[in-house]
Image (cartoon, rainbow, N blue to C red; front, side, top):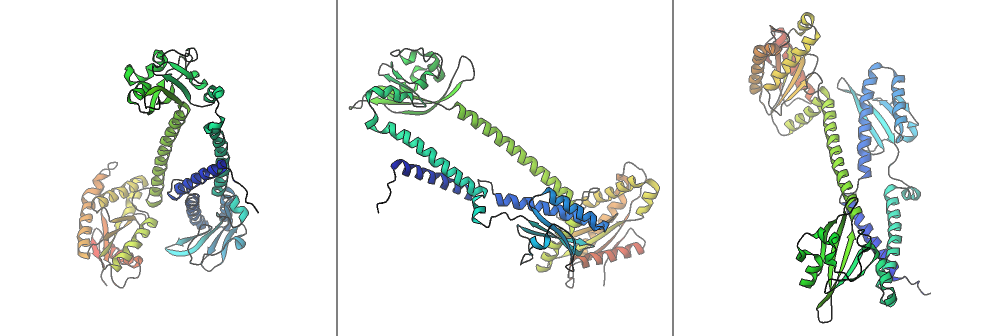
Length: 500
């Protein structure tokens, strides 16, 4: 059986389409095409964190109906969510929305995946349970699903459109390039079909032929008779400057070399100027002598306008991305900082302390903890009010931050109680730091509260160092807290080092 014959136009169109699709794949591999999976992963991670934070807040009410309504609202607002549930540590479902038993599949390695996300909830530093969220699968699992996948649809539509576009264009172009179809009677008609403006001049620079596109460049072009020197067309020559020797066709015929890529702005009697790309190629005889010149004018005004719009869009996108980055930083600040003092909240503090604790134990480095409490803080609230009490807390934080290093951790542990972590610091060095901080608080904290004069602020300190028998950071904090209790029992405004 004879194989079907494929025309050259079809082969060229198929090759150009394949090259275009290959370029698109290379751009996707290089990261220049938006990653749908990465965007979906980030959106689902933020959504999971938001529902986990909301769950932790609503669990305090001990009302499962409130939590169930919140889960139902979250599921109704996000069509990708199939089901939500809060599972207690004993494995019992406390609240569930949707057919959770059917949609939820626990990950094998207990790590969240793209479609099955679980977030632990803690109470008093102890695991309470976990939020389980089942999402719609992102990647299809059927042939029909893959055919509907955005990337596959894009490749198919782009490939088919490009193939037919290339096919129609190449078939038309090859007809003009085929010398068997070019007859003298149709030369002018052939030039008129070109999208570029064409002008042919002889060695005396007289116009011998122009096409319709050239005549449409300017109102005066159609009025110029054939045989008139092109240099007399002021509307055309003035966009190249005042030097006649700099005209593209003059240089092409003088140097006997093509002049390409010359950009000029062609002024119009009414309206904006046209952006043109001019090329001039000498027409030579068999001896290589220039007998004339072929000049083409490519109108790229619309392309230039679109490029300007794209450039402006990119500038706006960059500004929007910077705004999003600033907002993300603000969200991170709100999520990790105490709103009154600006120091670390307990959640962020324990996340950072966990890493310091593990690394210090593995590398046998020193690690010290200082617990600090404002002496007789209730008296400030009772005598001056809670607004002054807040100023007292902020004054203490300013004093502590001024005496700590940049990599030290400062956390608002309780109402007027603060916890300080000093990496790579011995107990003796930590005792000196605590003594200096105690003295700075006694001397300067009260005077820094400008709304109320005559305040005397003191604080008590307790510290402990990392020991080999400690299993978690809580033991280090407990020892420092015990030392703080001894400072309070011993009269306050003093530093106590924990001892066994």
